[in-house]
Length: 176
Image (cartoon, rainbow, N blue to C red; front, side, top):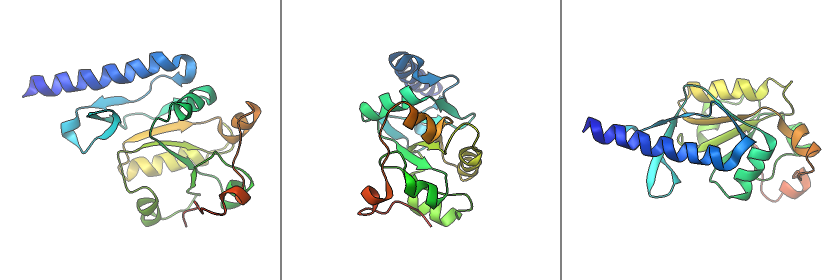
């Protein structure tokens, strides 16, 4: 039984390593640790087998790495930690807004799957809101947390589009 769990960890870890290699400079190590699927529900990020990333540290991703994940349609949830006003001025397409001070209940409603891959960002590396939200999510037992510290400013500077409040108004994504 112990050998089965060790083999499962090796399979999950090798899949994570493969993603890191495929994305090249897009991911900044350390990413996250893999845990055996038997330890929780898991997340079907890797096909039939489920892997869970333990929150021993937050992974970080840069602008190009995030763009690659989105282009490859890796299942993830973008979480904008800025104020509703800043979110309304422009955010990464499909992101939900969980501003500072949001309640635990609101987080649970907006993010019901604690094993989902969450990429949290704010305006730039000088903005502390994403880090604060990551710590809050970790305390609420969310497992797969990645920090995009460069935020909206880096996304815009790279020439990637932002979604505006007008475009998002048909589908409100701000959690209150």
